[in-house]
Length: 360
Image (tube, rainbow, N blue to C red):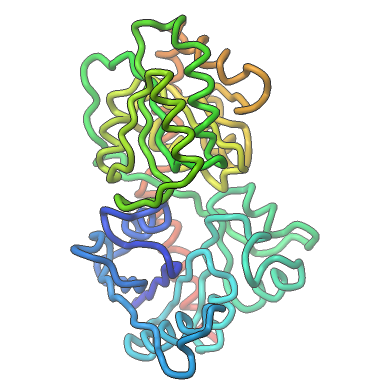
């Protein structure tokens, strides 16, 4: 079976700029899978065979609605002649490519009601009639089906290859870690505020922040980043900036506590899963798909609910037995998202879609 995976236009498929979608595609791709997306510098991620696509110029050069990217994708479809097309996070593109006469999967990683081509119930209804829809969490499935009757939307959670995670040290450092984009939605400023308030009560502990505005080394400076970093330095937090994914996992393996204080409803919450799998105790926001991911394996605290985040941090820092319990729970919870089961589910759905087309 020849599968062609279409990345979002701005998703970098390289180790130094990979986001959650690129990492998931790389993990799940078989050696024969074709992955297409915008050109990257250097060696692409290892999953599948990556082909950089070139958008057309001419009459299309000034289009800003995704037309040029769609035309480039159609060229690659004609070139590779796949049995199945998988489009990540772009409903309008998936709908357009469904006219190619090849089965299309649409894998949604974010709220479809914020996406071009899926904002209205009628658009989502039409999508289900043309493509097979997947979501990475039950919360996203509910968002897709809101104001619709129940439909054939499959939950296919993100996953990890647990066997490849860094080996944790014999004794973890007294370290609290924030790892994520330096934006308000991720609660970076809430983490700084909480640590500033409680650090005097935990003098033996350190706090570290990993992240930038974007998933790349040359991430732009913003007024939010400047303000948060200024406050973080004043609070004694170590700032590491953007780090590649393997470096983030190494930091999680060393940390005792990882905080995921998201304000926006996380569609899934890959950072929380990685932290649990790495053996850290997790404090997470109870929004979006995060409660599904962490189950009973994390303390839940809203980032702006009074001093809830501060109290959760002090509780986890001050009680070694509680911390050890949540570390153990996290490891067990992470087993539910192992790569092997995810690959089996994906292959089953791929086979079903291709066989369905052949029978028609």
